[in-house]
Image (cartoon, rainbow, N blue to C red; front, side, top):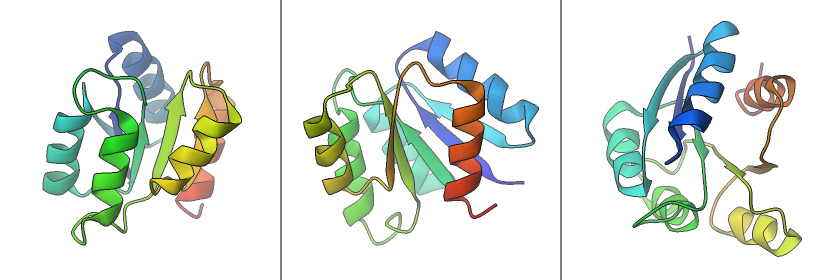
Amino acid sequence: MALVLIVDDSPTEVHVMKTALEKHGFETDSACDGEEGLEKARHSHPDLILMDVVMPGLNGFQATRELSRDPATAAIPIVMVTTKDQETDRIWGLRQGAVDYLVKPVSENDLVHKTREVLGG
């Protein structure tokens, strides 16, 4: 079973994504900010990280850049999941190392489809 780490400071968003993914057979873990996301990614080596952008402290762009440049976590795919819907934000997220970019609100179908697609299933 694939482990998906959800990094988002909104308990509601985390709950919605966890519920959708777990219903479709994924194991999930969550972190409430970029710092905790880095720590959990390095410790549990998830199969995929869903990363919000706007968070206190270390934001999603910074956390993605750090994870994608760290040899210990560089192989973990990161999908940005954010309300930032400008094309420049999407391009910046991909330049930081994200493999894809979803704009909130994300439907359950889109979330599950993207998760399966990135994980090769």
